[in-house]
Length: 627
Image (cartoon, rainbow, N blue to C red; front, side, top):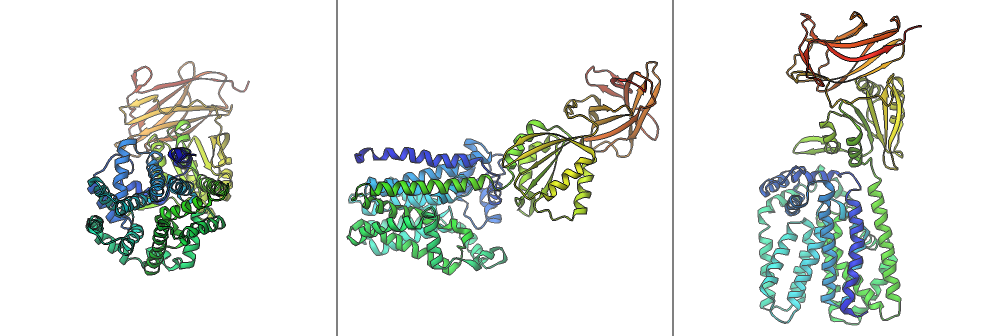
């Protein structure tokens, strides 16, 4: 293919990269660090000021500069604040990183080197993980590729760079500095390379001045960074004691970058080394950059012990340089027919396989709270109770305020009056305490939902189902997937198709006391009622009672049930009226609310007719009687 059109292969590459990032954007719950990210930009409730973000990051996340959070806030203003749309910013940065890596390889070597380098980066399974996470690591890769490309473009071109390239170099360096502290790796690499490999000319001085001035603008954040590193040995940084040794760091870097295929990496690297041994000038400069970058990483890790295996993401700053080396090696293979094609196809296959594995692991780690919230919003009603069982650590703490990630997702459901209860896997409660807690909640509900992952450890699920079996009947499974099941239960003796709509009121007492709905079930011996009440905070507790009465055709009260009015924003309250001794016939079900001390009834309004009264007809019932 003519090199003029070689860039066209970037289109399917970018589409493939987009595929993994887009699928992952809504594939999993917020992680704990993503929750913190969201907190810095106001929990997705709207734009916040840069000053607010600066202060929030400084006080709560000094391990990161605030640059990424500024961009995320601006992104939220443009596209919206849901986690899925916010995660697309990471995907955008990843795509730009692939594009700039192509340009870096093309300008430094050839279009083929650029394309192969872009493929190595775009099919990186490890990088694909961060294409759909609310963190700054794809920006670290993007800004590294951009700054390295622009730096080499300026120092290697013969003619004087235009003014805007100097401005872009300054802006890119500043953005890189404020993206992550590991930007020290590429920036130190460039600084050493600039000192040992670039002729000391006026342009050399201007480059140093431009990038140095960008570094000076990091001074406002320097105190926070120093304070962070002074705490590097504290209890909050237990991982520093198991930082990678130099051999382990190099091996892990190779495994992650090669998509777990170190042999293929070694083969391609041999061909890249061949270019060095052939004394190709630019290959020598690339190898120098790579050796400096790896050396800087090892030395910094030995000094600060900040890269254990759990923080292998810090190695992503090396990805653009490593991609260039792979691109160079594959371009050297082109001297042998089909060899480079075999190598690049193998690299893509391993990359896609690693990306799929990581995406699958992300999608199937925990109970998908975001899907649960969407499903519940369609099927639940006010007064329902949801038990959800998850192995995810959902505990959060931000600004000394503890919370749960589940609260973020289920808050819209809770705002509609649906209650929910978390059951952890494993559950820290003793069995007796668990039974007591669950039974207390079950005593107050008509409909109960249970959400869980089929493959989680479900000793608590079995116990919960046993407790439900005492007073509830299983109705249906409204959602059934490998990652989420949602089961519905109804309180006995009510049928699963009981007609309830507690969002529309039956009787209203000045909006302070509202009978939202009434479910009625008869088994021939008793009439069971479940009344959904909403009680405003201004209603004094232990003051009012409710009566349900059955009137015969002559208007006589033949059976009734009285009890204290519940005191809750919304609560289902059970009433049982014996009817086994009543003769067959039609009966009118009536209700009233009264002050139990004075027996004075409250005046209210029948919502359907607007009629005002103190004694309210609810339903006409036919009782078959004993005969």
